[in-house]
Amino acid sequence: MKEPQPLDFEKPIMELQRRLQEIRDHSDEHALDFDAEVEAMEAKIETTRREIYGNLSAWQRVQIARHTQRPFALDYVERCFTNWNELHGD
Image 1 (cartoon, one colour):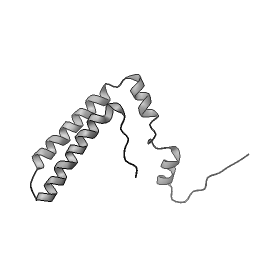
Image 2 (image 1 turned 90 degrees about the horizontal axis):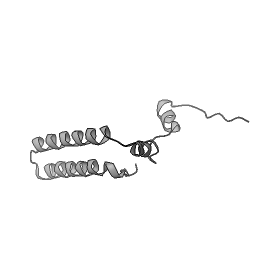
Image 3 (image 1 turned 180 degrees about the vertical axis):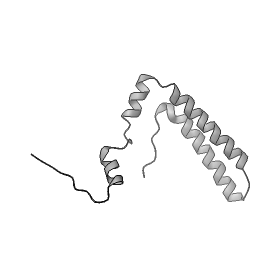
């Protein structure tokens, strides 16, 4: 799967997610318990996400709607149906 390409206004969320992954990796490597830090970081990510997406400008909404990694109709069809044939006509 491709690496997510954040939009400019999504970069703070991506940075927090990167830090969360670092905490989890450090916890796994050293067999330490960072559950409180992980929960706090997850809460901060959710708060930041709500704040950012709750105050989008019109242009930012257009950027989300036209994002290059947004799924297409064919992506949904391939996941919903196992045996289908695409019909073409003239």
